[in-house]
Amino acid sequence: MADFSKPLLTDTYTSWQSTLTANITAALRWLDPATSGTHTNVPAGAYRLNAGVLESYSGSAWVAALLKASQLSTARTIAATGDLSWSVSFDGSGNASAAATLAASGVTAGTYRSVTVDAKGRVTAGTNPTTLAGYGITDAVGTTGDQLIAGNKTFTGALADSAGHVRDLTINTQNANYTLVLADRGKCVLKNDTTAYTWTIPPNSSVAFPVGTMITLRNANATGAVTIARGSGVALRKAGSGTDANATLAVWGMATLLKEGTDSWVISGTGVS
Image (cartoon, rainbow, N blue to C red):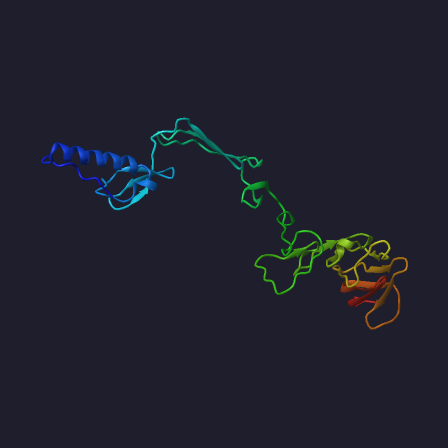
């Protein structure tokens, strides 16, 4: 066992030389752990190579020594690619920073009401729809086309259709011979002068009123009856009678026409004969 104690000043020259020689010999042998054996009084912070690993003595045990350099001999470039572009040169002499660039998604900068995103959350497309269909909404009330609307609905404003306000009868004044048109559905056809006229119900092939169509007729004058004539192939019957014939709406009379078949109508009211 080698003892790394220093020679004493009181040692004789021979013993001092002997102690110093032993320490040097032990130190040389200590460089090789395989032959160094066990030593005492090893100074803390001493170094040795152990199987190619530099070790430092902590004062109680040998531990791998960490070598630190203040700077790399050759600077290196650290970079990122892909969705984010970034690079910086680094040699360890100090902190390094550089601005990163986010890859463009291909979408023009702006405001969009509807966007498409990829799996990473990036916007890849943008549109500004102006219709419900453009937003993919299928359960809203549309402005065109037929649609079934279920449930009770309350409207605070006026409710109107092509014939006008649903609670009112739109007046279509016809002081002339006249053939009913599809726009008369749900309206009141009115005569208010003294002349007699003929109003004709057209066949379904000419004007396809839906079955169930109702039209109100009014003769609002003291003279001049109105003849309600059947168009080609049209059947007209008075309510309470099976007779198919033209009808007359007397002065001050009021009647309702109801389409109950393809070319079948019924008339009922006051002043109808």
